[in-house]
Length: 121
Image 1: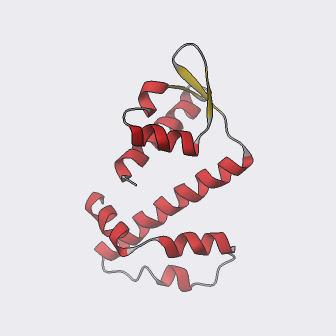
Image 2: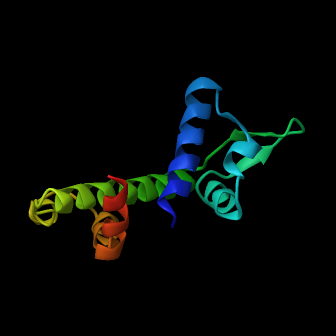
């Protein structure tokens, strides 16, 4: 996943929810096929005739979206920790109340992903 694509989609959705009651211009999240795919995957929406979408989301889609956002946040955390020579793995070793899905998300972050993020940090 291109992090710039994810950032743009999440930023535009946040702006639409905060300032436009969940209404978003389609052109803002359909810049490329990747943008369109990610928006459709994270935020299924119903289109109207004005070239815009009203963002709607089910509980299952909300859960998927939050897991995706948490994964991105962890990639940034890991990249920042590595760039500052900090032990990012200590985060995983701390006893926490995490369900199995959360642990799976954390384990999926590869060193390659964190290097890509560290270029942005």
